[in-house]
Image (cartoon, rainbow, N blue to C red):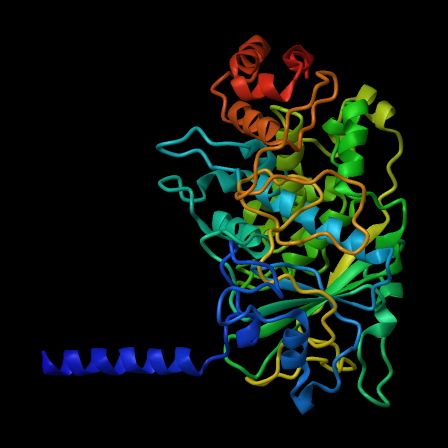
Length: 483
């Protein structure tokens, strides 16, 4: 008994000393998250004022070992689970990355609504998982619905949101908008990875790699956005959603949803390991991208083969988003599997994009972050809101608040509701309901969990008409009768 008691005291003391000696959560003590209801920086809270932006920057750049850090970093997240920082991004690129990260959060929230069928649930959006990850996904812990696949999805949601039960500690995201700004070692040739696709005929959208710190449990994830990412042809999720409202054929096919900035960022995060997102890590080689080939992988190798292919997760999440946004009973399919009429309506979709990953940092990479306990917060911070509320460019499909605030020049999109803000007013027009409103989101969730049989359209229409949120949203329920 004494041995067990002493051992227990030893273990408790060890962990206590480890925690006290470890760096503060996600930054220096001045960067520690505060009460979201606290006043903004620079306002008085009594005898001890809240640190100002300048004091935070000064504290973050004081260490001599920080001297190699790029001078143009911009904080792009507010009280984030994994705080992303932007480097080398101009005034036109910043809002595009901001919106892409927000919309990737929407994909994560949509995917998190998947529930495998089990003893206590009939399941939700299982068809999307069957199509792009494999039918074995329905066996992902039928008792509680928290098997390995669901845990990955929950972790993905956690890195984007501030009020999830789980979020990675001591993990940082550094996003470069210009490959030439990525620091390289002296006299070490830098590879132009943006111009070196793994698949002939493809163009690289982005690539990612890790940079593990010397502190136990601390690491950074780097994402380099290539010129292709910023092409106008690569749409925002909002743009394609609006296109699909006007052209229902887009709702039926996955291929048009590939060339979306948010999907690319979402894809790259699945290359991050189990401490952040994916267990096992998505390191399939060669990677599979095209919707038809992703569905074929799910069919031939099932979850065992798909779970290490990042694009399989991205397309499953996108399928869930499309189903929820447009109240569909079936997911969008690869164009090759769609009816001839749908194929003709969608037209020829050229799929010439890919994302890349590296298991370790390239040998030419010169880490701009000091990997020691005293100096690992990025320097050159332009803006930092330590107590303000967050905003996003579109509404996420869960109650979690997005972690990306507006940049200096936010895109002309609607502001979403968050868990601490008032609901968005319902649209006045019934022909084009605002699917980002809280009423529409709740309506979509209710219909997505419907017990109507797959061939009973009238049941779903009636349920829509009897749903208060659907009516407040202004949805024309009859338009979904023959989807």
